[in-house]
Image (tube, rainbow, N blue to C red; front, top):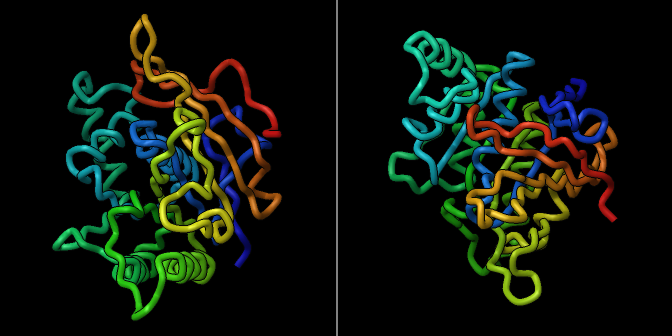
Length: 264
């Protein structure tokens, strides 16, 4: 089947970045930069615009109530605390219609377990998007004498093959290794992801979520940079830096007045 290309939902991204079926992407960024919220909003916007179904495995944010709260806010444009009963009901109906969850009974999933369960849900429910958040919480089931980079290479190739075979977009959030010295405070790159440089080579697409400043003398800063570091196919766009602002009132990232350009 033909690759389906989807608009991300941010107007400033049009012509620069898109997402598509039959692709595997990775998202990284330092702890506390907002990776979970960014990916939740990206796929909510795609699911809402194109009426697509999403399968989520979230291991640092409980599906209920935490991830549900994010989705309720994205659906209504209001913080959960000020939503009306009607807004909550409408949001929850959207979630029921568009979201499925993977939860390991012992909270110790490995890639094989995820792919086995995902195949069932994708085939039965026609899911088009799979999100794993984060990779670093998965169990590593290495073969005898298999090095870490060999294990990660094998797993990522299986994920990539799954995306192509089942015509889905498969996205993994992966934390970078700790960065010291001259790199501290700067955005990581894909090859800084813990475990192996193959995080840069195997995925079709890579995103880095970075907030240049978290706080200043006036309080919390809301500017965020989304660095689109890799696009294997022209339909996915090109390397660029995109500026978003977290709108506290609506609980979502919105386009910043200035639009990022090419990365040198």
